[in-house]
Amino acid sequence: MIVRLPSPDIRSMSSTGARLSRRQAMRGSLIGGIAVYLAPLGSRAFASLFEEQLLTRPEWNGHDGVLKYRIDGTSKVTGEKVFARDIRARDMPHWPQQQSHALVLRVTMADRSYTGFDLFPLGSDLAPDRVVTATDLARDGLAFPDFYGEDMLLPEGKTAAYLGQAVAILIYRDFARFRFAKEKLQFNDAVIRYGAVTGPLRRDPWGSSRFVRVGGPTPYDDDVFSCLKQGPVSPSYDKHEPVWPKPARDGDLGAQGMYHADTIQYELAHPPAEWLVLTRNYATQSGDTAALEPDNANGWYDAEKQELHLVVPTQSPQEVAEGAAAILQRSRIGMKRLFLHPCFTVGYGSKDHCTMPYYGLLAAVYGDGRPVRLANDRFDQFQSGLKRHQFSMGYTVAVERRTGLLQSFRAEIVANGGGRANCSVALTMVGATSAQSVYYFPKNDVAATAIASRAIDSGAARGENIYFYKCWMCHNQYAKSASAPPTTVLTPRAQITSFGGTPITLTPAPRATSIA
Figure 1: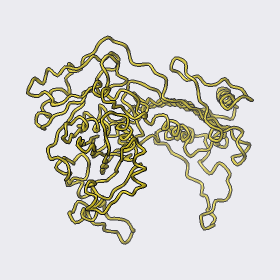
Figure 2 (figure 1 turned 90 degrees about the vertical axis):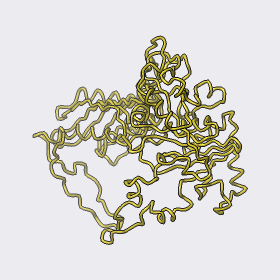
Figure 3 (figure 1 turned 180 degrees about the vertical axis):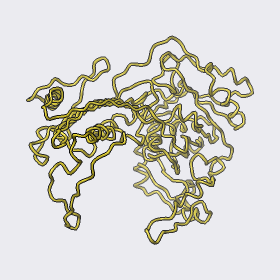
Figure 4 (figure 1 turned 135 degrees about the horizontal axis):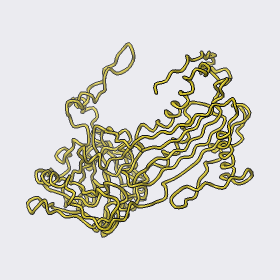
């Protein structure tokens, strides 16, 4: 249960008038006795933000009925503290004022065993005040929420699941030593020690699904078969490759789906004379969202009161609150209350279900009573931030030459999910069901797999519309050919009316042109 309080200083509840009801207190105890409070920064005194000119009062464009500019635009471009990255201990009125800083050591190889690290470049002057390793986490019972998998910090003797996997957190009580230490360690390949070459980990895909549809005689008749109605076809795995069910017309859902999939594949391989069949292969690289604000977190663990305070930029504050509570509930830290302060941020999906808030939680827990800030620089973000998936796509489209009507669509899509599953399974399923975009095909067979690899893990980054963009390109190559008819409303449809019942006339579109 998450309690929302109207005050940024939620320990001073008497001054804000906020009160926990008996029912709220009882519900809070359901998470292993840990009460979670979600308190966005500035929420108690939102009006005072205008008075302090951190936010600009809304000014409306009377002609268009829209705002002339963002209320937070001026403060952002002039460097006011509206992002979590800007927040320091001194900005939190009830925190200790001395700010500590942390950095994360990460592997740069994922094909050999990790055997430890060596801080010899630092000497005694730049030695960290606290080092956190997998041994500490095992002793204290700290581990990722189940969604993120295992090895929050990689133990010695194991091969990293992916490039950039974290192995240790180094904590410094002063910024100067932290900064000099980071410069000595960041690009030094001798810091991380490796053992025998094992090759990358071989694992089953994070998930696979297949969506098959065979329509009725017309677009308005019931489908002969549809995975969207009856459920997707799921495979087993052999040698880390999907093995689809054996086809059978009268078998179970998987067998029926594969029967129709095989029929579609055979028809595309042996098309009628009036069909034009186009087959194209596409690929995209893994991409960084390049959000303006790199991942960061700032946290303070009050051991006396058994309270953890955490400032984070996140696109999923509810998930962070629940995940952090799950970590603490299973640990031996003895936590009673978690105060989460989500802030303004820019993420494009890279701060949705990302791991940084949980590493910030670890740094705070081991901060020896001082607030600890963990913040990526731009290189750190490229090395560890969530990426947009790399895709390989094989598309086959059949078009009737005379009418231009689309007849059949088949796709094989592979998304590289990287070292942790994250949102890869759900994203790949959504992409597969959206692959044909706005076009109507009487027959579809779309198979999609999210593989596990040693790449940096990928999340729900914006831009996955590359699926249906490629479908459009494939169809566009036909539409621009000399023999193709003009692009019009090719599928007859019932009269469309507005919400008020007024008929809407569909005007034929101009002939399609290509941007390919």
